Length: 79
Image 1 (cartoon, one colour):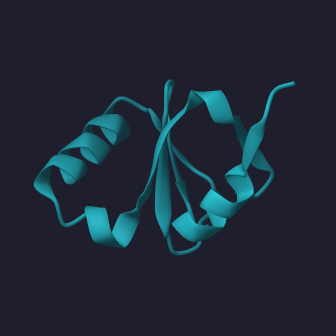
Image 2: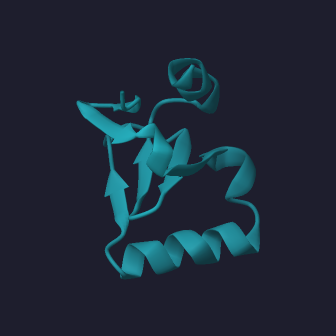
C-alpha cells in the first residue's frame, strides 16, 4: 500500500519520493540552499502549493514543492 504526504491545497506526494523536508526560514540563509532553489526555479522544477507565506519546502525526486505547511506538521502527517 502506497503512503502519501499531504502538502496542502489538495497536493499530495508519494512519501517514497520525498528526499527531504526543510524549514524555509532556517535554511534559506545558506548560500547553497538559495542556489539550489534558484536552479530549480529556472529549470521549472519548483511547484508552489499555496500563495500564502511559505514555511517549508519538500524536495522530491522530480521537483521541489514550496508549501505554507510547517515542517512539524509535515512530520506528523508522514507518520
